[in-house]
Image (cartoon, rainbow, N blue to C red; front, side, top):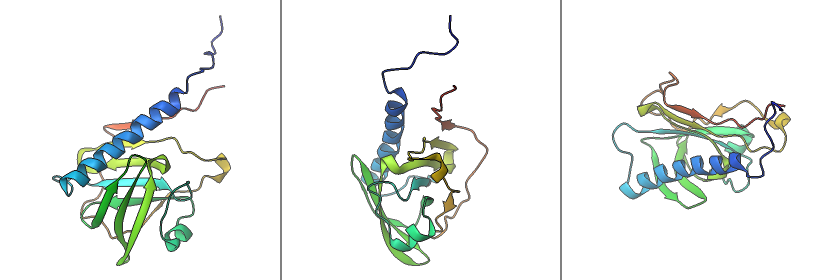
Length: 161
């Protein structure tokens, strides 16, 4: 009997990734429907800046050519959630910017108010293309994130050979 599990013909990893990204869409949809964030909730959303469908100002793409993290807290506007993406207005160094981010480009979602986090498998062509994540520097949040690791869901589908 072999210790190696058989190759699956069902793309479980893709299905789970899609379902977890739908959580992000549902949460943002609730914020949109309610006209703002409830209580102390706020979000750190990390995404691939070069992913298909991402539309952000050029100066942000130049500063963060691979990945960046935005903060959805007090200073955001025009949040619109679609089935495949969201758009939001944020301020970077007091310059208003509109960002359109497909859910497929999202690699991380954190709500530090309740120690909740999701991490997604990066969808890149080549692992050599991965670069260090940079914080976007949009106008800062009032609260700092809590980084104790509780309530973190990390999904890593790397296969052991």
